[in-house]
Length: 377
Length: 109
Image (cartoon, rainbow over all chains, first blue to last red; front, side, top):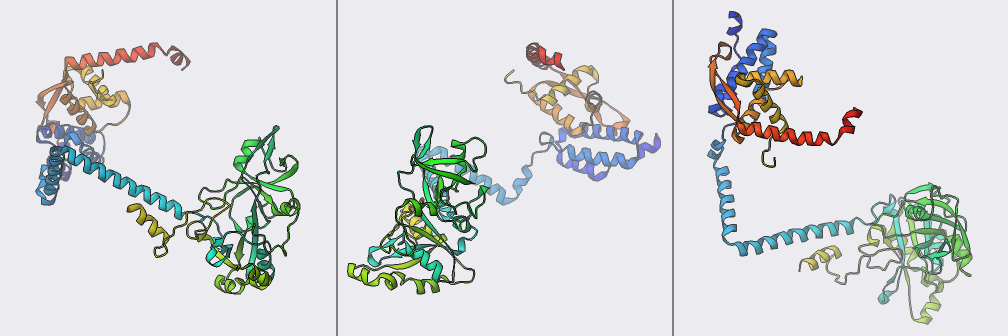
């Protein structure tokens, strides 16, 4: 017994307790801890008892046992901050109407700034998900002062693909007319349907859930539907099933694609192979019809090719082919290319394939800057 | 019941104080509760609960004797107030009310 009493608890631990615990609790708390220490000594090694004592010391630091930390106010800047808060609260309470108006204004300003941030971030996020986005361009037709059309004459894209080695692939797209309604249970349903040519999934990174993206849009009367449409009309797998459109046309489902992301300028419910359009339209040609500006085209540029070089060579495509006729009509057209990242936000172009940012008329400002500027004003 | 705010652990400590009658001081409470709960407790958690309950009026305390083991420091003996007894009874009645409605659950155990 005598040897045990000589072993004392660690000094630093008792010092910490004396430093931090309220004075009125110290005798009792330290007494309890020393009694536990003595019990531990009696039942085990002294190192274990010391270890446990240190653990107890750390666990004794509970908020309601601690001293008041008023000494922290000795640091001037903390005292100063405390004073500032007090003054602020008192003046808020004193000028209630004024401070309410101020606070509401501040809150509204912050909220609107936040909303603007989200709006702009959302606008900027458009079309970023395409893996080959840096090489994708929308083919457009400039017409001088008349503006720019987002569609092209039938042969333009085909000519680009066949005569210019820089062009890796092209896409023809055209919105299906209103008569293309889906027949289901003897009713007709309206959906957003587009004809698209076979390389559509080669260019755009829409996620194909079922079916082969390489061949899904090759054969006539092939149709690719989104997940939503599948869930609406089918139970279980829909691949290979038949969809009837326009009361008489039967299409085979060759692919199920994930719903297009909301921030995509290309939106659709169903895609029909463009080879179908060649059959149902009555007359369509890839080499004639320079006056038919009703197809939407995209172009995939080969790696390493330069778009402005291609534009220099190809912009005169209309004039080279049907220049006499156009001059006679008093019009002129040039082929142009809009990079993927600019299609939604910066082109000012109409978009028949989905949403588009409204055209901003002020040239001196970059459109986005102008947008935030006009919001602020 | 609404305003009592007796925590679960506090309730256990309070019951231990009552069980130990006149012997309820920090280490004795700790030992008794460790045995009943079958787990190690720290002096800090017991002390913190005791001080909180004293503040809320569930406990009274006074200094007791000092022992050699405690380095000559006095114990503090705790006793439960009538208010504590009343609160514990209320809690028990509320719980029993619940249990009388869930016979099936207990018989299925």
